[in-house]
Image (cartoon, rainbow over all chains, first blue to last red; front, side):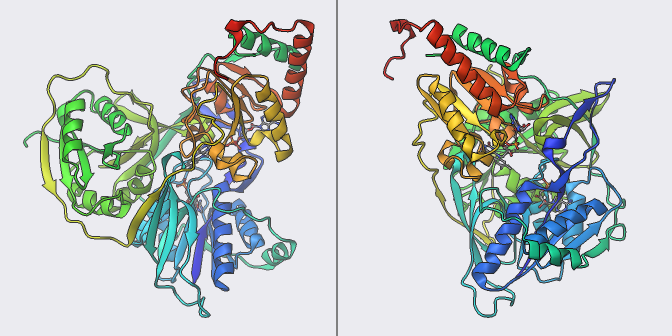
Length: 269
Length: 343
Ligand SMILES: Cc1cc2nc3c(=O)[nH]c(=O)nc-3n(C[C@H](O)[C@H](O)[C@H](O)COP(=O)(O)OP(=O)(O)OC[C@H]3O[C@@H](n4cnc5c(N)ncnc54)[C@H](O)[C@@H]3O)c2cc1C
Ligand SMILES: Nc1ncnc2c1ncn2[C@@H]1O[C@H](COP(=O)(O)O)[C@@H](O)[C@H]1O
């Protein structure tokens, strides 16, 4: 079994500050902290658990991004993946999901992956498109919001390609689940809560630091040649949906004000 | 049919019922088409979809194409993509509109690739700006909104449910329904059933006051603080975000949001919650919302009546102190009109 996990480096949401310019446009201030997309940590963990269940499997972690994104590979290998693959781009800005999916598909084609795992969405751009798009480019079946996987019985030849079905549960509205059987090879976009991602281990981190990550310059794979299907023409601040009255003063003054408001509304006992 | 149908809506349905998102999609399509309703066609794909097609034509006044696909009992992204892909390729369709629900999120991006179309997901705003159409969508957990422009000949859009609401006024004339058969070829994905969500044992849907915990409470050790806050109120319950449930701080039956429970209490207190749309969709019906968050830009504040920029782990204990002190100073008489009936 060969597994490819796609992991993105995203600005740590706790360090994202939005600034409003004079023309009312919103821009993201300089980000000091990046980390692995939360959803993707669950995808890496799921791959590790599949390997544990089968007894053996080869796990590659792939990221697309500037040189900074390599940290995501260190984390993935630190968690226990075998290899890191860096599709390096000089562009440090918004990359269209379609472009990224085409690059991932180009890389993965012909390499015999039985499973390609992605996260359900990226925390920063929140598109949720790359997984199904990779499947479409590679003409593979897929499922999104995957919350459980059950594999065909792993044999001794666990590193052989698997030609069987994987049983998958995907989450739908209200927490109900669809139960699917999908023929391998397949693409699964993983939802959080499917497992508990482990922390990188010291020994794996040492291995990761020694290991050369495979770097592919995606400029060669067509960066910039891709026809611009859609474009992000700037950002703005979100709309206020409610009154949004900000309480002012010291913390205890705010506490007093809140109690008064709640009493006024007859919400307190 | 002679007029050009350049805007296609794909109806959302499950279990033989039209999902309410479908009405939103119809409303969105009409805004997008600038009221040129003759340009719009709603596709309903599945088994036994005749009655649904009629209902949609009647309710929306828009033309409907009933694509009957015998054997397609459950939604299947693979079959949807194949059927819609065949019907829509080279049709010169400008927009294909799907719901940003669990179905649309799964098939729309793949359909876009198959049709060599653009794809913009989670659209929750539409603006016409100097001839350009701006599709707006949340980014960074709702802290900002991006304006997207499509240059593609065909663009697949997934539209956030609950944003674009249908006209209350019913149209006089129902739309026309045309019928078409599509062959069902089982794909490489088989749906073997649906497992219904666990029951809401905690009763968060019935609670009058919901105290909701987010990742911002920091650690599981702070959950009792949430319980204490809830105890300030009669008929209250503690709920949480997906992250809090993922971490095991609360059972999933107490998760609020699209993939959890929908609540509409008199009061919702959001503690350390960023306000991502997937969460907010589960609590928009609350009458009064208070949010406590250290980040003044948290999206949750846009959904709140009262905003408190404080550390929830220090503010809530303070709030409890102030409340207890006030109660000691002037105990509230348990007047009958202050009492909740039933309990
Ligand atoms: C398909 C899909 C379905 C989903 N369904 C759901 C769903 O049903 N329900 C749901 O909740 N989510 C759902 N999500 C996840 C959702 O996108 C968000 O990731 C999640 O709601 C965020 O949870 P949070 O607000 O607790 O955490 P975060 O987004 O991490 O936010 C934490 C907040 O706490 C604040 N904070 C930090 N420290 C403090 C402090 N000391 N005091 C006060 N504030 C502090 C931070 O400023 C931040 O705003 C879904 C996602 C997907 C892709
Ligand atoms: N730059 C990237 N590098 C690697 N994987 C990515 C990248 N962007 C997106 N992905 C994968 O695609 C998933 C969905 O991303 P998106 O469609 O951008 O919301 C993520 O959870 C990742 O698994």
